[in-house]
Image 1 (cartoon, rainbow, N blue to C red):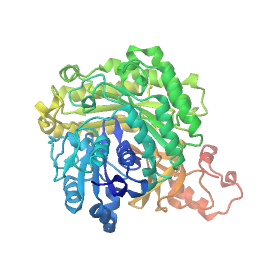
Image 2 (cartoon, helix red, strand yellow):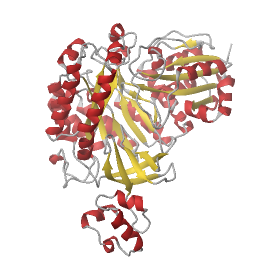
Image 3 (spheres, rainbow, N blue to C red):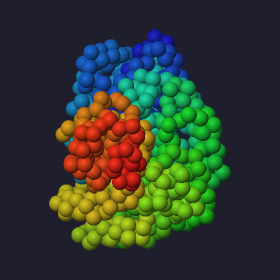
Image 4 (cartoon, rainbow, N blue to C red):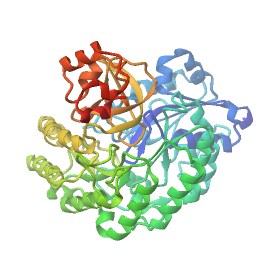
Length: 565
């Protein structure tokens, strides 16, 4: 009989990305935290639990010894909505197999990888369930499997889903894992689960495979935030749910009182938090319960941090595609939801909330509190060339009406067993690949760039930008949060720094900025010329005539003084 107190456990985080769950750095998903809590609850000492990310193992082969020597090696991963990543690179199937081959103890695999694996982490693929040479694959919850496996002396487990009482224990006991993440504490955002499952049944989505919505209590989530906060975490994202507005209700209608307890409680136990963002909102909720939704949105905007994004799963503005895939919101309904979020939460810190949405020369120089994001998915049943035209017309209408969206996410479907799309597969996405590429570029040029100028015009201040990598003589970084803006800064600055940035120019989905406020006596030529209205000649004159006692002595237009000190 194996005593849990003697077991050593290594958890390898290969990263997850689901419709309602981020786990690629700088995010840490719930899975490794809950799983660590589960094995500790089963009797394994905290000191016997090691956590590594897949990037750590790539960078330091010596850490593979923890994989090889562990009595139990648990791999967590799976991409059901893959994207492009800056902070980390998800594990590829071959790497997942290698972990199983290296491990000398018992191996357990789980997370959304249980829904299927493709040839690579990309859209437009058919996904198949594979065990990848692991001893055990959790077909239910990985944390429940880990608990039961330890409890059975590594003999086995029944595939099951955990309940909320177990979740409350495991979330509390697993908070220590964040301290082992290489990004801890400054560059790590904790994904928080408020519920899972969905009341709706869109053809492509894996979230309904978790069943109907199952909500945690506000007190449970707040307690988890408190535990993480006490372990040094300062950034939180309420992203693990299909619809934050439905929290604490019947799965569909908003419950403003529950959201008030949730957000107010988080602010109370984490008074010095740096980020409080959310992710998913179902636009049909806003349309069907507009007044309750307005109250809920006001509560969120009162407590969150600026730059927050409520992702709307429109998926397609084509009525044919909507009908054939059981999509629950029409283009007109989604437009109304976009409008309401703009009217309630589209104000900027320093502006009067009654003036929302605020943009233009008189608006405050911060990102809006909360804006919609639009998710569009291609390769669905019924898609035709007209589908692409429908989507473009919808986006153009939003822009022409003076509204704002923080991001437009365009991707291709992945077909998983258990969803209606498994019958169709990825064939439509493959057939339309060239059409998709052309349309995507048109959206970037015609909609994304002008929209970004509206959301974050020159002069917008982005506090606490984390510098992450160098490319083409520039330094790139992002704030922590939901879909943060990628910022390019002239010159190669030391990575890992956290700096305030002021926006100077725009790409399709990124911005150029300079440190804020810019030291006029230290700024480089590249930084000076990045400021709108300062060309090379003026920048050269500024450099030649340094130092200055005050920015006003520079002699530049008064509108440009907001960039400098």
